[in-house]
Image (cartoon, rainbow, N blue to C red; front, side):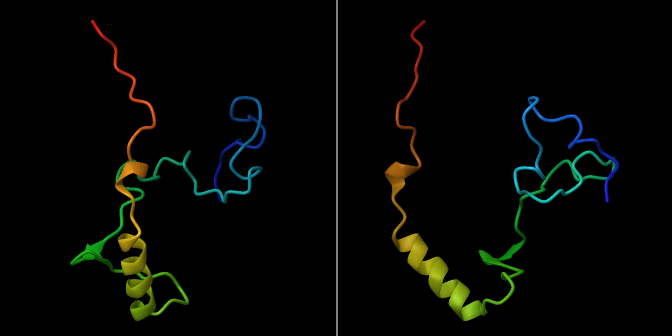
Length: 85
């Protein structure tokens, strides 16, 4: 439970996280972590915590398949904006 008024004072006068279907994770609280929020602890590039309901063997198999279909060009910007001085 947080002490925020996100649903009363809407972001951009439009919506809030909970109205958009995202659970509240207390980002307005003083003890909210300000760094390394979305980092994953790994051991030899394998996550320490595997998602619930998935065996480690299945997870590693699916991760390997996903890495083989990785397309480098999809990470690059579609249009590179360069300004000439």
